[in-house]
Image (cartoon, rainbow, N blue to C red; front, side, top):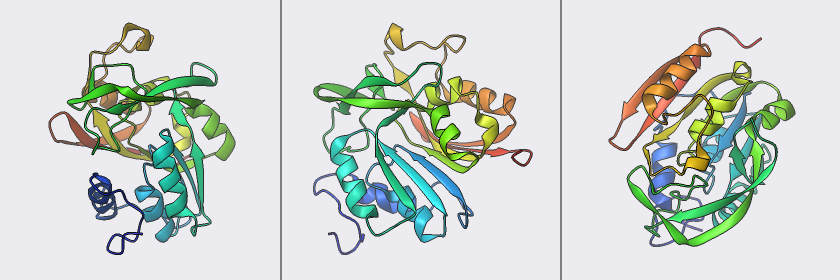
Length: 234
């Protein structure tokens, strides 16, 4: 247990900084009280902990890498609102699948692994040496399970595009916050019908067409985005 951060973190990693940035409010002010939250790319639990300690009613946290998932469970074990799931959330135009998760080339970047078959994410090379199979869950299946989602957080190293581009149930989501990533060297098999471009401009256009007002904050190869539904959920 790391006394200063009050969470379990790995030495020689970015864990502490990732946790500090999230709890310091990198996604902006969010009214969590009484909400249903879905945390995609939960890492070691930073956003889920923030939501739980600020009054969220129910939090479903999804993490693809087994090592991160173990820390997620440890860090959220005293928070009854948090449900931890070892799975990669994925596109909704296919059924359940098994994906190939690969780590970032920089071992300190414990949040940099991805299930996207590509050369790099946010300028960070993807290594082929450290990899594992992980169960994938279509995002719309999660919506079917939980109903309306008040806050959807996505930090999934490129998976934000297939998740959001293929969902048919974004009308059940009120607020989306997350990171967008530059994806380079995308494998042809990863292509999405009708969505050839994976970048923040196309992502913004897609979310605006689905009834969101979108704000972005650029930081080079990656950035923060926030989408707020213009009308109340049905």
